[in-house]
Length: 126
Image (cartoon, rainbow, N blue to C red; front, side):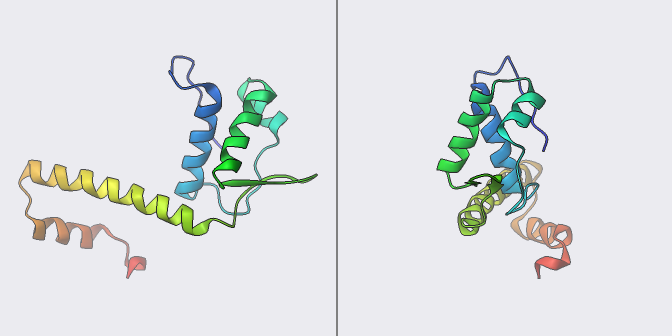
């Protein structure tokens, strides 16, 4: 799990941690059921306090993205797959919207953009 903290960011450290973990969950980099580092291990690895990592995990748990199993640790939640799918779909829609703007800027037609998407999309989407 890669997390990069910025001291110059206006976001608090716990938010930087939780937003990056959330991004990794939504992208599939962290799979449902995957165990997360312990609070102490994450804190030590990032050079922050355990209280900071605890707050980040608490926010993720409140959002339903992770769950804590007493005595075993924190895991990526398997319960909210539909919620995760919906958020990932919103991300795809955002990317496609940006692609449409770029296509207009270079003068592509809707048909050309559609053809390009057909060429770029993996066959597994069929």
